[in-house]
Every structure is written in structure tokens, then in C-alpha cells.
Image: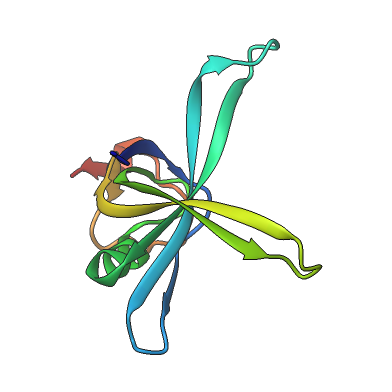
Length: 126
């Protein structure tokens, strides 16, 4: 059996970095990934995929990834059962990332990261 996932997309919102009671870092975020096929109206279809990272990778993602920025994720698919508030059995699907690569460009050093995107001419490539 083989379970390997490769994704390239943009972050939907800033990552959420937390720590388990034992102090283990965990970071969760959602990646918007465009589909190859477009809808009938010519609109691009998009999937929103839950991603979770652990340990040092979680700290890196929490510090460097931001809403709207592109990233490449490598990991495996995990499907977990759980019970909702009404007691009904549900499943939760997420990608557990083993590796992450930031894509695109980054803001120049010395500029504040206010959450707004900078113009392309103000940015430098990695």
C-alpha cells in the first residue's frame, strides 16, 4: 500500500500554531488548490484541503506561511472518524505534511508584514 500526496496551492488564511499539553507543536491550515477542469461558466474550480504539520515543521509553517501565499506540500492522506455534537458518526480528511516548500516571492527585508500583499516590483525572489 502507498499513501503519498503532493499539493501546490495558496493558503486560505494564516496558519494556526498551537501546542499539545505535552508541548508538541502542531500547525493547521487550509490550502486552496485549483482543479484542472473549469466549471461550465468558465470559472475555476477549487478544492480546500486541510493540512496539519507537527514538530519543527509546524513551527516553521506558523512563522513563515501567511494567508494568500503559495506553498507546496508533501505528505500523506489521513481520514479520522469522530462523533459530532449530535452523536452522529462523521469523518475528517486531512493531509499530514512531512515537507513544505514556500513558493513565489517574499517581501523585502525591513518591510512590515501587515497581512496585505506588496506589489510585485517591491518583492525579491527567494
